[in-house]
Image (tube, rainbow, N blue to C red; front, side):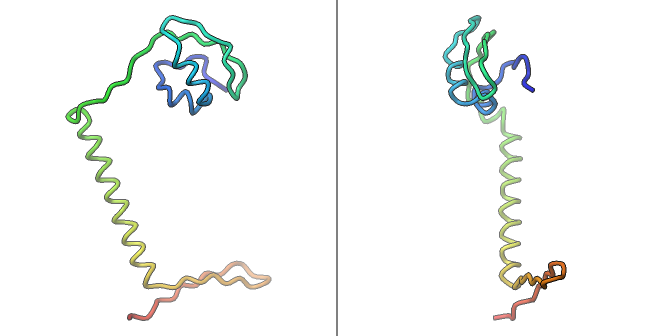
Length: 113
């Protein structure tokens, strides 16, 4: 169910898999060191930290394409939501259920104000 090894995995991902307390204990261990047993929801683990690589904040130039793509995707989602909200204001949606029938949906256009 669990991988035998996790190669250079961020502690936040270790925390998602094994729990925050587990990740905290592993994060305190130096490279080339065994520790444990450490408890997780999966049981007790002996952990060997082979290597540690400190995280760093990348410069904008190296991540610009990703940032631009994410910004555009977020803007598209906001525009789409605003469009749906405007359309929803024009209609009334009612769902009626007869006792022995399948659900029936009706959509009625609201009168212009």
